[in-house]
Amino acid sequence: MSNLIIYSSSAGGSQITHHTLWLEQRVNALAGECSIVYVDTDPSVDKKKIWAISGKKGVYPLLFKGDTFIGDFEQCKELNECELLQNKLKD
Image (cartoon, rainbow, N blue to C red; front, side, top):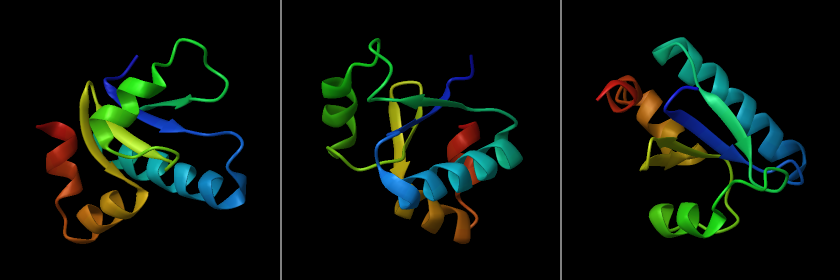
């Protein structure tokens, strides 16, 4: 499993689905591979830990590298537009 993880929600509707797919495609293009974990269907996910690290509860998708929070969709989109996302994924 990759240490790049996108946490998302399967109950979030079409916007979260679209944002999750965009983020997955971008991360895969820049770093080669990532995993998507759905917090509402995977009982092994420690939601409180994810929320504590990111400071975001109920906001998806969230991109992590190991235990390091990279950003939510909007933050990752901005990093990508500034050509900084690839460095965050590889650091």
